[in-house]
Length: 387
Ligand code: MG
Image (tube, rainbow, N blue to C red; front, top):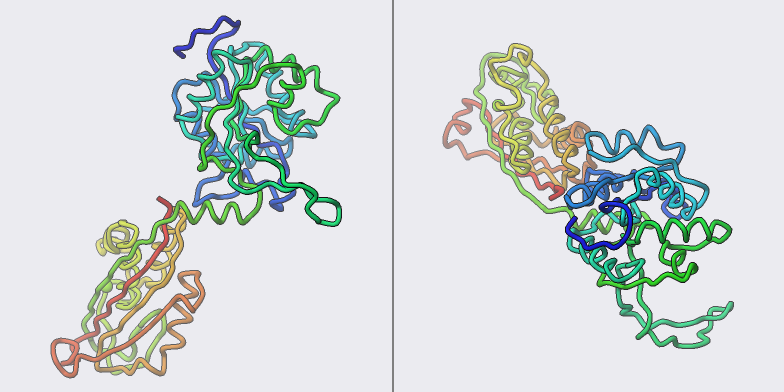
């Protein structure tokens, strides 16, 4: 770290504090998936990605060893410190754990703020050149009212001198450790308040609107929305008739005077649907994932292919918005089977039937489908995907 520091210790460590139970969230929100990646993991990655920090030290709840290990798998973080009964106690435990190899500076961050930027980290560290503590602060845009117990407005509070405090809050390590030790009997809501109580100076730097804290499930839903983009994909397939007594279409066996030739069960509609989904997520085509040269797919039910494509979507934190399939043939008649086809595709894809459409058309006697040489299918898929 290129920082002139007339203070003991070397470098800057960060405590990422995720030891709470999430009463307002209804569970440990730091382990919730945010577009496919746990909130806690995103927060740790933000600090690891900065590159200038000495150690990234998670502080976790005593019961969370297993979920934390899964959440942080493969990340170059320090061994987690076990938190305490309150946030203040958890931070204290984290600070004490650094004492054997003390840093010059320490950042203390809420695990539930996954979008801290490198620029914000720099601003906080930079302010510690002239203060014991530094916090990111945001101006208030709403008018602030003081209300009484009955909900009546008692006063309008001038907001010019008020800010909202975010994290990471940065401190000279020796100062914040001493302040926490002296404040053990108090219940303060952030670490700057602990330092203030000890008489330390706390600077504000500009916060970041994106650096929001997840408190409720609605917060998580809004952040998820912000991370998702909409993609569409298209699929087409055709199979020829051979002698037989039924065709598989959209996972439904439809009696007919022929069957479709194919390596798998030749469900031309599910093949088009699978390719549409693979196309939407840029994951190649059905032949790439299930090579016809592989004998294990011989006569395989095509629902495997669609289910696999949906797994890929979900692995990327995505979801299927809708799937629209058009079957092109003169015979068999699709209408009587359409509801069953919609239900079956929805079941395989793991979505509501309202997100699936199955249509059919003929080509009025023209072309290979018109001559009843086979059946073709087209599909388009819309997915929402984490960027
Ligand atoms: Mg095919």
